[in-house]
Image (cartoon, rainbow, N blue to C red; front, top):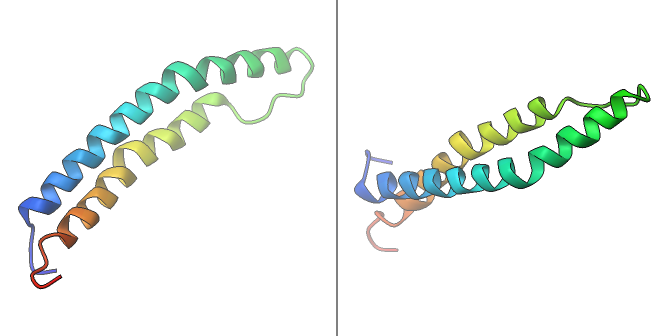
Length: 82
């Protein structure tokens, strides 16, 4: 790679938007079910991983991995001769 291209920045922005939408969707649909299941399991001492840990891993994926992958894919379009 020879530098930052406009396609790479555009790809990173698109990856960030997709990651944000993914996070909002998962936060609205997945987190309440995880929290309810975790609270019920606490009454029987069978709880597993805290839902906040799972959502933290999802945040890392949505806000770092998606933009990085978007930058890499976007910068591939800037290569001449492909």
